[in-house]
Image (cartoon, rainbow, N blue to C red; front, side, top):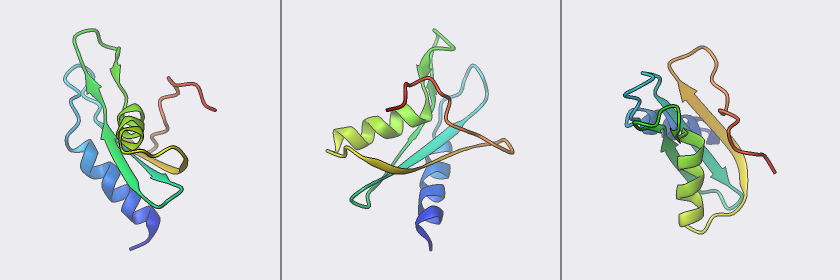
Amino acid sequence: MSRFDDLFAAARAARDNAYAGYSGFAVGAAVLTDDGRIFAGCNVENASFPEGWCAETAALGAMVAAGGRRVVEVVVTADAALCTPCGGCPSS
């Protein structure tokens, strides 16, 4: 299995656990750190929709909580032909 396959599988597994009770649009994301670790997250919506956690934020939070600091690859997946990061966070 390739590194991309591993990232895609992690993102897809996270998407299966998404809470998209308002939009119905489940999203999963996975990030690869510079030391080779993979962290995944899913979107979590709440009553203040459209506020909530995007999948990328959840994956980055898991990464930072585990001591990761540098992302080298990202995969975002949803039930759509194309799914890009939501763009809600400023890039650096």
